[in-house]
Length: 417
Image 1 (cartoon, rainbow, N blue to C red):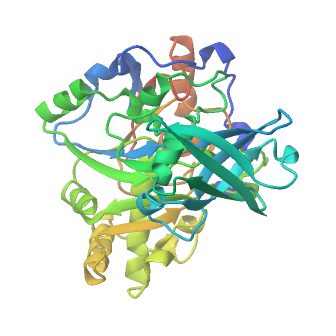
Image 2: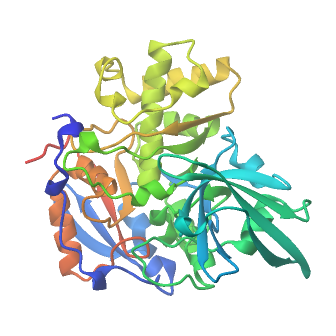
């Protein structure tokens, strides 16, 4: 079945509010871990995850860093307007250069209380290095699903990264119904976060500690990193009855030639994606490799993966191994002198998708009727219900600050029963 025909009502379950983790545990790696393999469910804690991974595995993490993307302005009349910075609106895919910009930037934003912002700029003072600084927001344009906002500040010598760190608030997910606390600045961030750009954490990685990484090294498990900047669309509910009417969110990925070489070297081993963002990134690379086989002169921009194209012609008709596809992608990068692939992916992985590169995934427990739950169902078919029922009955904590799972993917396509 083409995933566009999936009825989202088939992917729901009852999630009581008390099962949603409002706070992280005191120790990251003490979170519970559910293992699913060949129909068997076990449980342990993340501190021991290395015991359940085959020696010689490759673990791929998303090293994006969450930015304090929510900025609140108070109008003279007392009304509060929230500007939620989603992604740069400057035609640039280089987040590092955007974050280092001085004086002003333009971002695509969501605006809370937009009806109160009739005209004119919003102005807010803030402290920086014991001096007073000023941030001004101007509404530039209304888009179909967001707004373009220009942010300008004085002193102009500050970078946007400095401004938003002084002014912004960590954007906790909407289902965590509390105000962010100082501890969230550290805990809603992986310990290996390196590249600013996400407005939501790649939460599967929140459980990893130096202790866990040391245990992985002892087992000769290799580590690799991709960067996918998680957008607010990751929380976008599927409101359409059938998936063909749902628009999947697109996100920027950044993958180095070094990571692609690691994938090639480990293609016969257990490649594990840590988080759904890593899954979507790695699997997108396979289809980009197919594009370089079909269209050898393709340019970077056209490597972007659209929502349904991996299920349709011409990509779906090409049946080559992951090794061949990745080698073609690597050759294309070398020929065109690209050290990194930086494009958007909109891939929607759901029942009917056959995983090309990854053999297991580490992920938290996701919302009912979400595209993240669809991805889990793509991996293990209707057994996702067994996994979620077990988690519910055995006091696992759900969603971003909750517990997680290690799921081994059967090496045949998962069928919906």
